[in-house]
Image (cartoon, rainbow, N blue to C red; front, side, top):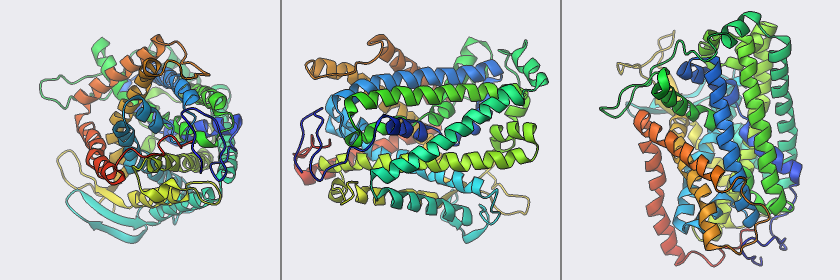
Length: 522
């Protein structure tokens, strides 16, 4: 395969096939963002901030942060339309080490852990229609590995693994097949979310809920959950007063930002996007704008249908299900289950399609398994897809042994021990690290303008320098709050990232250099 220079848009014989148009790219952005979070996360956020007004405000803040970041990424994408996206931006702005740490964390847990989580969510809601798909119908009963961890295989876990394997298999046939799946399921789930919004705001609106949520209590917190500090000497926070509300809003961003994450996946597939210098920035703006608008409207729909107390106390945090049950009765749970099955299937297709392109770019730099840097006869990084599949499937198997506040093992009604999922802990750990990588990548806009002022930039970051700086400052405030109030889930995230340092030097030593193909990712 011949190589290309930085930012040069070429199609090489035997290389990636540029088969993704603007619509396809926008569908990858939107489809990768919309999973199951928007249907569940508002319950936890409402307990943290305690009012309808602040619930909506949290999602608006998330939207402003996400759109600001996406617009800044647009400049980098137009400069460097290469497979690997964010990995390439970090490599070129800072160093190969920093790019590798991002890619390593992606493979270890960000991408694969999210794939595992979404796959089990798919299986959980499919179990509404097929009762045999259950978290406690065991193929291999839990085997306790320690006082904290176990491993098992339930029918629910098996269905999640089958889903990962099936989508990986489909994507090995080429990006054309992957985009057809993505377009179909993203269209379906976007329409489902629009229908939920329409039903909540116009059909199922509840006069009592509207009066309670939009009246004098619109901004007044109630039934809030205290947020204890995890560093000695730092006071606990509760959503009252300026300080307490700032802490609550920042902590709430963990759920809302993660629900709106994965928008950057389109940058990983830049080698397969038609006219990427134009279409990637546009797809970022269109896709993120669409999803954030729907997310804010969905939360407005929730507070139009349900009093805040019912949102806070929704069974298993399934707010969307509670809203549809209010409108349709018991049939609402079935309707919502169908929507989430569709949503999670489409979400995982986008994650699986895009993730392997990062490992491909790393391998081309001599920083990952050499076989992942080769394309199959269908012009996709098939080995990278398979490796991602295997690791994501393995992350479905480990379990955490659930305990109460006293440390006692939690048990179900039948007296059997209850288990959580390891990937849930891992995802909590990396939210902090994901924000760091976003801040660094946006900082790369400033660095590259200084280092490479003459590089062609078909699109420039909106509102530069004010908007990118505002994002970096706001995200930094969130990071500081998480260090103080979510310490137990921040340092493990940093530890996961730092494990990549010795691995980098091992691979770097084997390659002897950064790799002569470091600019051949387009």
